[in-house]
Structure formats: structure tokens, C-alpha cells
Length: 126
Image 1 (cartoon, rainbow, N blue to C red):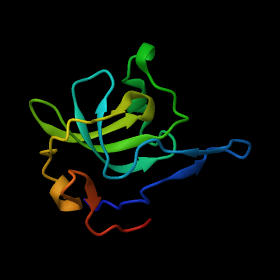
Image 2 (spheres, rainbow, N blue to C red; image 1 turned 135 degrees about the horizontal axis):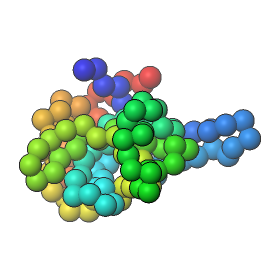
Image 3 (tube, one colour; image 1 turned 60 degrees about the horizontal axis):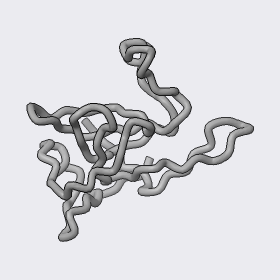
Image 4 (cartoon, rainbow, N blue to C red; image 1 turned 90 degrees about the vertical axis):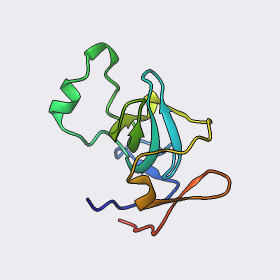
């Protein structure tokens, strides 16, 4: 799977009359879910929801996030496994644990510096 890193700070215009919106999190940032026990590294950002309607409808209506916000692709992990997650901005918080992410694809795309931050290895703009 080819993964393309985008600029670390992203600004979006969500419609002709909307103001530019800045993504709260950046590529390489470690985040955790607000409700569920998982965390991950951001590897891509969509300015608004860009998944399937089937995926959207599978989320219970009472907790379904609105589509008009950034959505983040994460190399994610929980206590049992590693996977790729797609999460709305409203459901993410910064992870301040400083613990490394064990997802195997993290090492393919990122370098971890002495401060524990993840930097894209060879950023490809798309």
C-alpha cells in the first residue's frame, strides 16, 4: 500500500462560503481516541469525511460524528492488536504518554527522533 504524506500543517476550505479550517493534529503526531482505548500515529488527513456510506451508517447514530470536520488515518493499536483506523477530529486527543507505537508500518513511514516525535521518512506531497 503506497502511503503519501501530506504537509504537516494543513488548511482546508470546506465550501465556497466556509472559512479555511486548520486540522488540529498533524502528520506524525501520536493521538488517542476520546472514548475507546486505542492510540496511533497520524499518517494522512482528509479535510472532511471521505469514507463509504456503509462505514458511516455502521456507526450508531447517537455517537456518529458530523462529516464536516477533518478525519484522520492512523496506524493504530490497542492492547490486543495493530490496525489502521479512520477517526473524526472530535474523537481524538493528543497522546502524551511518550510510549512508542508498535504498529509495524510506523517504521516504514516514520523516524522517531530523540524527543520521541515521529517525522516522515521521505515525505511525498500529493
